Image 1 (cartoon, rainbow, N blue to C red):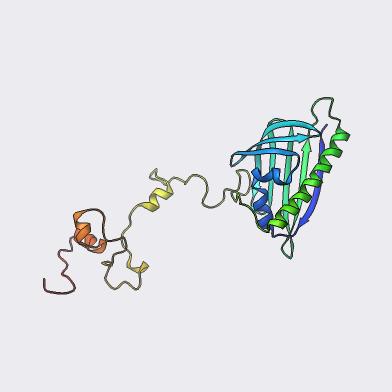
Image 2: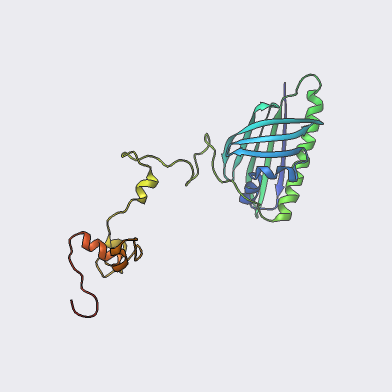
Amino acid sequence: MGTKVEKRIVVDVPVSTAYNQWTQFEDFPHFMDGVERMTQLSDDRLRWVAHIAGVRREWEAEILEQVPDSRVAWASTEGATNSGKVEFRDVGANRTELALTLEYQPAGVVEKVGDLLHVVGRQAEHDLKKFKEFIEHEGHATGALRESIPGTAGTAAGTGPAPETSAGTTTGEAEAAPRPYNRFEHPFDQTGGLVDLEGESDETADGENYSSGERRYRREGGGYIPPFTGSP
């Protein structure tokens, strides 16, 4: 049988600020007295060193759910058996309610459920108050982890591996390939594509003497382009 603790607090900062600070996991020792050290091993793996009911414990945890400005949930994968969740709710006037839930399984006969419930509950309440003091004093978050974790609402835009196209290349590679000039993308270009949009030189002899537009025109069989002044 384990113990479950639920605590709430309202902080006087916007929900994005509260969330951004909470996801700076390695800052936990600044406001969690029971946490001696926190190491973020990867986007979804954490290494905890903490004192629980007077006993020093170490464990690794996996972030099971992470939705920006909404909630973060984690659970141990080895070591001390525990899990937690914090939810963020905008309560208006640039204020945010944090709802923290902690579950912990006593280790052996030394840790009694009733005693553990009291100790963990008191520590959780203290840590939330320290978090409130910390973020309200700072006025802004020290950083942010805005990515969603798999198993939630999806990966945040711009993160994760690029999807492959039917040709076997990634989307990023396809976008990097040169594409034909489209005059409709440049409505004020009256040169029919001869304007230099790519820089004067491509590190070739032609690049030193002709603009990118002129080089394109020559490659496409356009022939010689007379200079704007003088005679051909």
